[in-house]
Length: 205
Image (cartoon, rainbow, N blue to C red; front, side, top):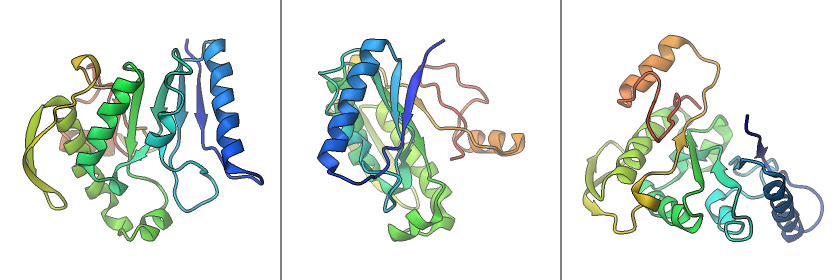
């Protein structure tokens, strides 16, 4: 059995720099206590999340806390430019020595999509397209893609990821029907239950 930490990092009164410093100290204690992973949520424009950019926050504790893994729960793919995200994920994977846990989702708050200037009704479509780009980009050194929201040809990725294998990746399941699960995984070309390094779960968030 492994124990991890799931954190929203809610706003509170006081200095944000102090809040970040407290979290880094907490990570130090968690690492010393043998916790397996620190997972960070992602929210925007609400007080539930004082550190909405997970990739930036994860850069801080890599060298100071060499044991604990660091993960997203989840990166909201509809809000990211997929090619840039692939580069950031590969950099983080190297900086962490291969300790990055990558979780992705579409987001559950329509208000966040609206405030980003995105249509909440197209969130799943944008997620699935970005997910396919991310999955392909982490597996191939050069690839092309043509979709409704993104199009590029022979994009090279000289960075690559740590140890020539992608960071473990997953999308959290929600309460949904079995038919929904099978349908979504089928559209993304995933098996009903992943047995690969990626640990990919049902994209439904």
